[in-house]
Length: 151
Image (cartoon, rainbow, N blue to C red; front, side, top):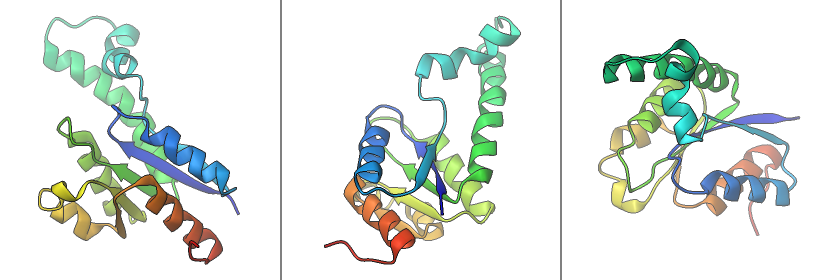
């Protein structure tokens, strides 16, 4: 059986690549999807497709609307949603995606540093697991697919 995992969250590290490599190494049948992680493309898709906007609010609104088509569709299609919170930037998009996943009844795995436990306590309470690193995430995915514990 093939599963789909939506990889939400911070885009300033290579965590997606690391996780996909672990999934592939373990031969787990997961298709990984996620938001557009090219920051320039994500920020400017609205104005490049629909035309320039002098007001920054409407410039961002155009792009956010287009990005939402992709993100919401892929979250709804996912079997499990993984949300990585990074430490360098505010993570409103990650929190929003976690909230959507929770509201839509999607199994939710949060990936975060221990230092963010207090700030993310409500999101953690809505999740099914909180992992500290990609190895733990891969262990969870392997367990839910195969029913076996890591060695």
